[in-house]
Amino acid sequence: MQALNAGANDYVVKPFGMPEFIARLRAALRARHPTAAAPVYKVGDLEVDVARHRVAVAGVPIKLSRREFDLLAQLAAHPGRVMTHRQLLLEVWGPGHEEDTQYLRVYVGQLRDKLGDDPARPRFIENEPGVGYRLLEPRG
Image (tube, rainbow, N blue to C red; front, side):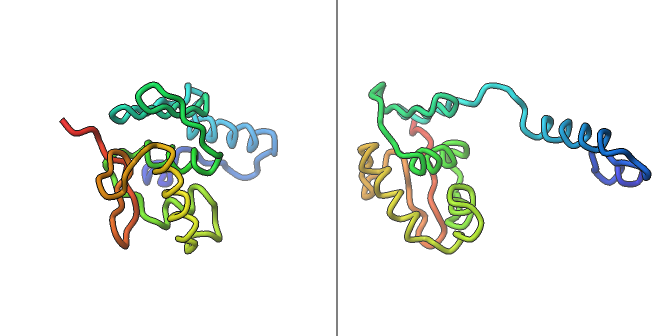
């Protein structure tokens, strides 16, 4: 009971059977990753449809590689918030690539080209020098 009061979602009392353990594990995974429809992020005239793996700017479809899409989806999930280099590398490239900032620079450059975004006057992706990148929120 202390574990539940401390924030645990469930616990298993010994002895337990594997079918019960696996059922509880599946339930925990379902709770963490609901099967609800994947979001469609809209930031200004940029639209990122995660479920359909589609991106459009002002209604014009943009063709992205899987990594470019994953990078943009990470940024779109947190508009206005700086995502550190390390966070982005871990989420998009996985463990072991947290220091490969050159990957990130190259892919951000490719994304900016494809989205028609000028790094000197960004509409979508802004660099936070030495920290990371943010997807800009629409300006009012």
